[in-house]
Amino acid sequence: MDSDPLGLVKCQQCLGDLRYGDGAFACDKCSLRYPVRQNLIFMGYDRKEQEHINKIILTESAHQTNLDEIDKHYDFAQPSFKLSLILANMAKNDIESDGAVALDVGCAGGPTGKILSESGFNTYRCELDPNSLFSGLHWKHKNLQFGKHIVCDTQWLPFPNESADLVFCKELVHHIADFAPFFREVNRVLKNNGVFILAEPSINYRDRLAQILGLSQDKHYGHHYQVNSAYLKSLKESSFQLYRYFIYDYQLKRPLFLNADEGPKKNRLPHSSLKMKFQRAFGGSNVFFLRKTANLRQYPKRPQIELINSKCLLLTDDYLEDERLKKFHQILHQAAQGK
Image (cartoon, rainbow, N blue to C red):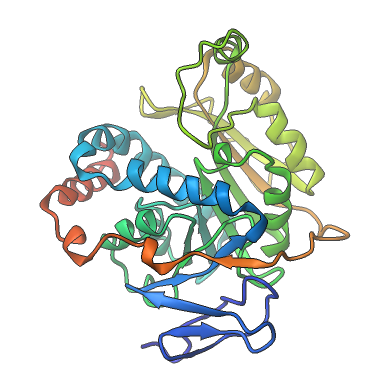
């Protein structure tokens, strides 16, 4: 075990220091013990949200980890992995810091933690559903060792103020009804001038009309799709400045309207409003690159944390050895080769 297995990780409730012993990390300040099971640190969520959180965990576990329905995940993986590779490469160029700290927030079982680690980031994986988080342990990297896989509600991140260089958030925010507190939490953990990458689908005019008429086909519990302007407004209120924006088309498997004139050292952001209007009309996934411009005057008070029961983890090491997972590695290799 690493001599400092926790690295940056703190008590989720009070942000105090933790110590390891008897299979758990303990906080002497608030007397919470966070158990470790199958290489995952089990933290929790605001106890006021217990019923809602439990429903999300059950829904996402069934959706993300059912190998009998893996074919549909293969199809999605091809464009998704390619996008993660594109974003990690841009982040590496934008931040230009060896060993910069990256938080892969809402990571599920995808390879982004591995991709970021291979790009030189000191990466931590955070996910609410323990089975989804565990399912990603087959993406191995020397950086992704003990202490780097944290089961927690990502609206309450267990990291100190101004500790991260990058927060990477891909396809998470549409699971959060009130996303403003989450953006404030991202501001809290990012260093000044830190980078927030938000890749997020949002509704277009056709989707909105279907919602109004009660014809929406999305019955997935916990989905709360918004228009992209709502995200951008809330991000600005949380002291984030947009410096790059493009649309990613999952069917074409490529970015749309990616402009070389946009970047962290550029003073212009050409046509971003037109690109967002195009997305609202025709769809596609929004990709926001943002800089934290200032700390907020005040951050929300930390809640009383209800621990996620480690018995919610139903998967075992046999799952990670299943032959069907190997195809994901082939898909990632092909994406890295530009195929």
